[in-house]
Length: 267
Image (cartoon, rainbow, N blue to C red; front, side, top):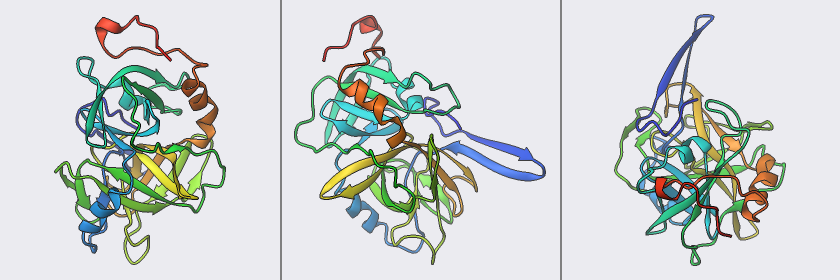
């Protein structure tokens, strides 16, 4: 695993028992090579709660004043101008709460960031509370590096895209996906790749959108290529901590701006 606070995607090559394994931060939308990418752009418009975390990450609006992301992304926001983009607006961040059990390169890679003003015109993608994620079809949304399963990530054009994928497996910490090459996989199959660590895996239930996980890293094949495995932090097993932050039970955290570092959060 690697952190998105490093401004460029980091790839680690591991050699173990003669097997080559790539591990990288999972940070962009990479699509099928045999589909018109305009379909991926069109799908993204249906998920306005997906957010950019500047300068080089992603997240999702889960309450009017709170964006959920990966802890390594939250730790790396700019200390001078900590901001996220939700919809068409840049909004400053004034408080960050990292999961207390998260350690660099470890589990519980999840965080919440509070906005200085609420977003009242976009419905939040609330944290998922079920335990039935296996087999569910999700949507990934991001603005990061674009490419396809044959080339891998190749450019960053700032265009928002959304791809679909199916949950392969889960454990207490993680949700697992795989980038299947056609003819396998979904019609708009895709994965994360450079620029969108912390971005959401979303599902729709009864007319509402929920957040199943946030993007953390990939492994196996080269990043963004067919066969790569994507790993997201599982939201449902962290829901008690998320709810504690949202309702004010937990006030531990820090202000990202140095001048406000000692300021207590206002609920």
